[in-house]
Image 1 (cartoon, one colour):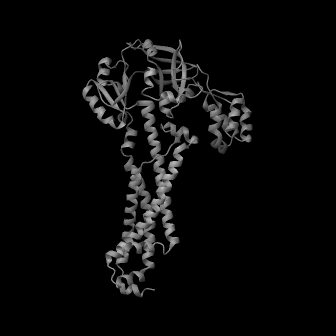
Image 2 (cartoon, helix red, strand yellow; image 1 turned 45 degrees about the vertical axis):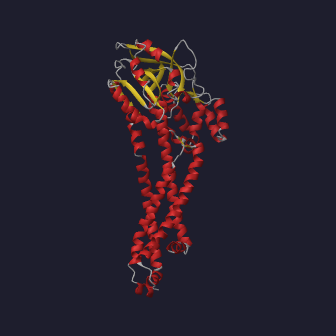
Image 3 (tube, rainbow, N blue to C red; image 1 turned 120 degrees about the horizontal axis):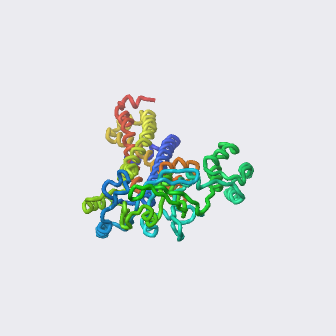
Length: 475
């Protein structure tokens, strides 16, 4: 009976009820979509870090991670690998050599970490081979008599290996991209002019284009003008096993793009055989073994087991290597709950205000109900149910709308190309695919019901304080 009365009461003033429901719908939708967006960003960052940079677990010589001392290698690599073969949950592993050095071209230099890999085996652990920029080569796919190196796009820009050129091909690409003629006419003014770095190219664009035009078309123009000569050279300088400085010329086998500027700027990949030959290291000496697990949820258990059976080595998992990502993944549900709590708390004030108006407008009616025998418990329940109904209708509508929009945007993602440089500086992709789990909607539903209940307490108490006789006399 009380449920039916409460349901009918909220539609006595449909305009006011729809305003409340609408505000709750918008608030819940905004919260759901914002959290799905953040969740997508975090998930993509974790996946890219594991797939392209650090994998699940790393085993190194004791103390190697403190300063990357090239003298600290895994003492008996064959024995270590035989132990790893007995551990359940390990899908595969690969050995690496790590050397700190300097990368130089004729015009620029930069400090880098040189990683020696076995390309065929490395592809089984990492997906770096899938990030090679089209037209720059491949992932050590071609045999060569030269030393080969794979570098990141940001380092290639820093070393002036990537240049920018507006030519007929670039202009044709801009036409396909839908760039209007007025912009093409401006850009064609420096057709044939080669810019040795991105900074000079940006300066030239600022001279001829308006800020609004750069914001809308700048990234398209830059992609079209992007220029690279396959087989470019750079010099790598580093210390050999006897701490003598050595250097060698390397040809680029390709350029990778991981959407992580820090990683791209600091990491160069070369063949293990080339690096060992130049440093004079033993072929069976390695600084690092990278492990890939069958299930990421086994990370903690496998790490603990390896620490017990490999006491002479350092064992680090991805959470220890990337503590910022570990913190976000460990506390992500608490962060999302807090975020939604703030939104629902703000909406609660609107519900409280509406229910207070309802109580004041129905003072005479509430007095009559009390006079004919409706007890305080039923009055309280009626007010509470009206508040909960308003919250639930708006909340369910908001969640449904949020789920639909998240589902639609997750197909192709949301591209923030104009913010790519800033986002990639922190390791996050500018192309985000929102995602959210069913458990989150359950949590929101519970929070919405609680919001409705808490929002009804003060108005309901106000109704209980009414004196039936005085309330009946109220006009």
